[in-house]
Image (cartoon, rainbow, N blue to C red; front, side, top):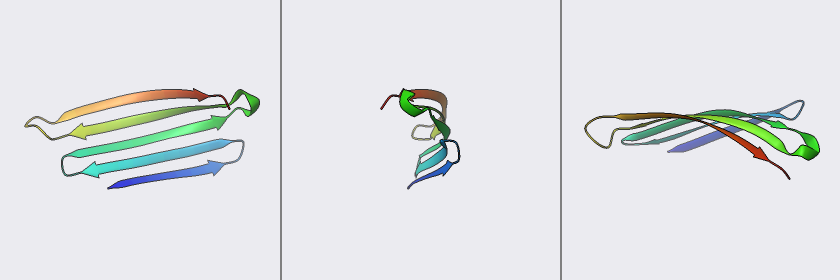
Length: 70
């Protein structure tokens, strides 16, 4: 199963999140993006994943900053 949601707000701000889920894998992500006019956009995404494929569960976390110029 995969689910994603994005919502734009005033002042070029967007909040977003997502979920991926399978029998032995789960991933949750949350983030925010800010439009910077002609400079492009800047966003930060936080991820939390868990894999239970093997005997011992594996947890992982990450932060991913992204800058995009249009």
